[in-house]
Image (cartoon, rainbow, N blue to C red):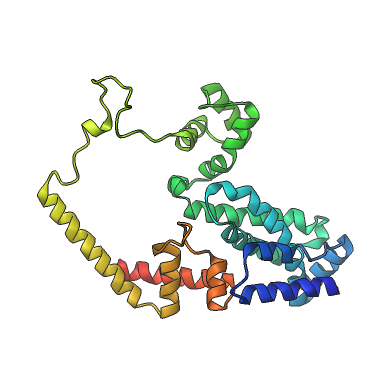
Length: 294
């Protein structure tokens, strides 16, 4: 690798271990890696594919980290930390490097694009509450494409049946799926109380929703259930080692000063490990918690 690339490598290593590391510093560091020529890329890919040269694979990954940063910016509108999106995209990049065949005449950037987006898509689907029901291939395709296609067609509100059929043809899905996903993405909240300017006979939800303490027996039952659940969660957490417990609490049970959960990179800096190692510890801890609670 060139001196410029080595310098960037050192910056990344320092960033991953330093508590002062942040996303802006990471982005500046990855931009220091020089772009590979087609000849150099083919040479590295062949060395890794034929001889399992891990140094060659490492250089391929490091020189394409800027691609992951660029792609992650396309998904900032889903309310998830960009640092986590980048981390998931990096996993897709490594999978792409592992499967890349330079003899097919395709550059790594084109091949890796699909793998990076696939990993980020999966992460968003796992973590964005609205799409817990978006489990089919058609629903996922619509979730990530419907809004941009509506802009292309100039649709401001909900799609009509004819527009739904047009979108369905282009995405190879059913028109009913288009209409259903459009309703989910564009549905607004209903005010629980009537407008101040509304007439006296306006029937707002506040008029017919039961009070939470309407039935004392239900209140007692709910309190007992909540107490049992809290007790069970505390017992399950205490079965984890200290680091795993702190990671789960920071990621799922505690909000930072900005009202959000701690990111993988923040926890990596705190514990002096890589963000990928934090993700692995979190996944193992959650699996153990689910087994204990069940």
